Amino acid sequence: MEKYTLMKQIGEGSFGKVWQAIKKQSGEYVAIKALKQRIYSWEECLNLKEVKCLRKINNHPNIVKLQELASENYRLYFVFEYMDCNLHQLMSNRKQCFSEAEVKNWCFQILQGLNYMHRQGYFHRDLISKNLLVSNDTIKIADFGLAWEVDSCPPYTEYITTLQYRAPEMLLMSGQYNSKVDMWALGLIMAELITFHPLFPGTCEDDQLYKICNAIGSPTEESWAEGLELAKAHGYKFPKLQGNNLSLLIPSANDDEMSLIELLCSWDPCKRPTAAEALQHPLFQGCLQVPSMSIDSCKMRLTPSAKKSGWKAKLIVWFLRWEPFSSLLLFVACILHMIYFMIWYL
Image (cartoon, rainbow, N blue to C red; front, top):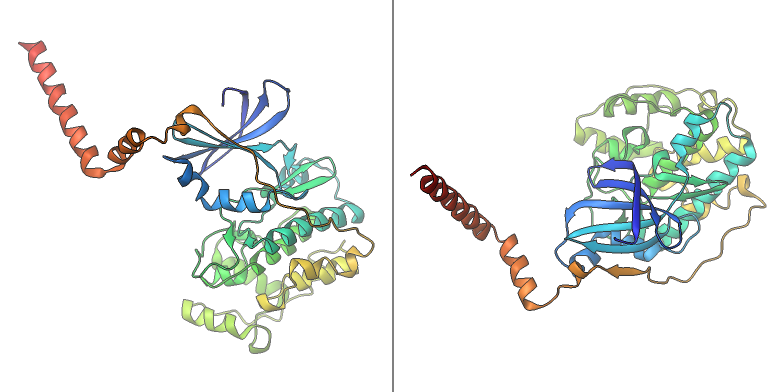
């Protein structure tokens, strides 16, 4: 990591911290994500789900590019291209809403990134406005720490994305969800792009479900029979609400925008369009899709500490990770400490 100069911290989470940095040689800005988790071998690094996902989807203009992976002192660093801000920050700093052309542009780009990601076998699970990065007129999907393989075996974790973007099947604790949770989140992001406000600003799971019911009507046997079974198993009873016209919550949306939002915000995941299907919606008529790109491995640099792969280094790491040895080491240290004080006292 010696070739980078850290400038300022620009993010923090349970995973670790994100820093704005500069490449000393070129002066290029980058974003460096430093994981809290200790990594003891390069093989362990390559087996992380986030690393696997990024290596698979790293060549699309609407997915933030991983430039380098570096390991130093058993810490892993992701070096990404630097983007100006996230979509949430952009909306917070604007005094006027986006134009129809801008909304179409943002949504089309996000859909292209999602379509590529889903086709490569992953879904995001945490698609929110803060995880969409913007520079000039380009928007890119970021933060793949919770991404999962499309073909992996459920059940999955129920509590994933931010509450206000969480799909109904996740709110009802289903572990059987799929890439359609990303499509639900996109519908809410699209509405937020138009109004600059969350579409369903719930304060807890039950309140979130109530606000959805109040907007689009409670689910029925015809609209989402599986959801009623999920609610019953979870001990939740849907309120009996007819719902208002969703367009009343998004009065400035045009007909094509409302049509797509209503499709994306369907109770039944099976009735939500895929990313590929959404790209064919009349809203995007005339938009040019980005052609498929070949997948190249991202550059990976091993620091000297990460290159230790001899039997001595592996033995040391094994001992350090072996709990009985760690306890014995602590016990010996305490004994030596006591002996030191006894000698000093005498």
